[in-house]
Image 1: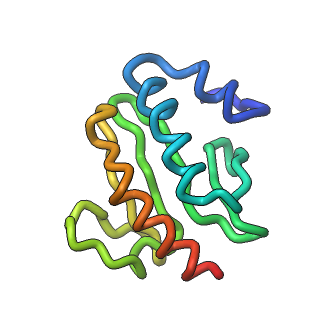
Image 2: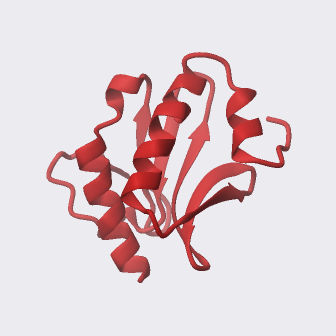
Length: 116
């Protein structure tokens, strides 16, 4: 994927349904982390509190990954989070229907508290 200067440029360059997923997820993440700054880190939309990264969205060919830097430290009774490297955990979003605002808000608040 080419390099972009803003999250808006990143999003606009995505094909559907990836663009729709990112556009639907951004306000959920922003509302859950009102103190966070949205920006690009290593080319991907990332939400950070201070210098601490909390989460990111990364578009692939057929899905968007929603990842939490300390996702393995988050209680996940849904079982949707998949463990990744280090302490990261993520979920694949294949459609807007995969975005659960209440669940994601809970995860984000827990993840931000770990970063805190």
